[in-house]
Image (tube, rainbow, N blue to C red; front, top):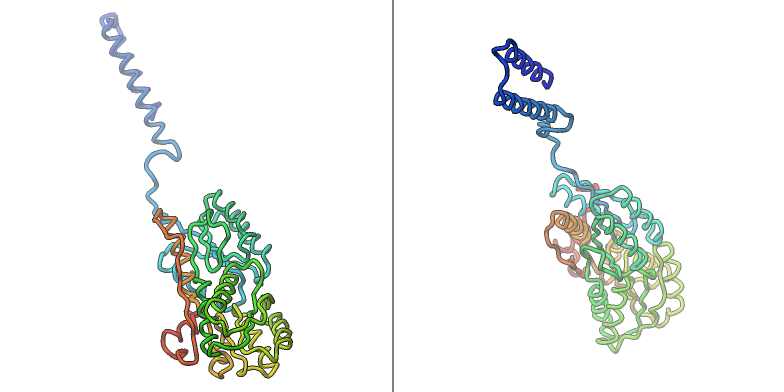
Length: 364
């Protein structure tokens, strides 16, 4: 186009200059100079318009960006986490244009593995992270690094000792869960007897809060209850918990009247230990988090109560919260997802049926 315009103006000038009678005056020269400037401006404008990548945006519709949210549980085998996964996917479906990247360590004692998962998602530049940290201190640096990279993190289920680098903490009030366990055990023991607390593993903030709530409540409100043991760890799998619970039951066999275990694998191991030792139904048992074996044990009179969380709501609200933050909306620093106690008396009501049998990923 530049060449065409230039050629046209050249013809005009040649005709104007031909013959003595067409000799240019000073005014004519000025006019010509102005025409030359206009010619150059037109040529530049045309060149800019025709340059690749310039001009108006393409008309093809690309659609809104799909946000990638990494959801990292403590482990991937326990039923609780499968329900958390279902809740996270539900939030993604409602929001639309959101992809859940679900990955965690296989076992809940692999803290280094969980750190590696966080680092991998950080390298992938996901849009946000929802993390249930295995250790309240070991994951802090990973969360800080994600924040420095512009990746916000919502913590769920279990907290960090330093909450400054996080967006929000979505979880059960685990201390109150321990309080509810103590109240239920005191109720079935009529306020008297020897009790055992089996811990989970060091560094797990959620279960440490449950343990503290249980012990504080017994000490402050139930002087007739004697804590026989509270410093033993059951372990992270039902098999390990079975061995450790059998040992503690053997030691206190003649004194123990009630036991409290602070999470699903511990509770499953304790129930099996009670059955193997002939104490099931004789020693009162309070569990935390349900599975089919524990629910059946409650219907048989071998389990007196199960403290319940709402894992679907936890996964759902964790994802909703990080999405709200990404949209620039204000979010609460602490979001409570609720805690409950199922008993043989209420286990068949609609509300407790839903909490005892939460939907798991792939069932919706």
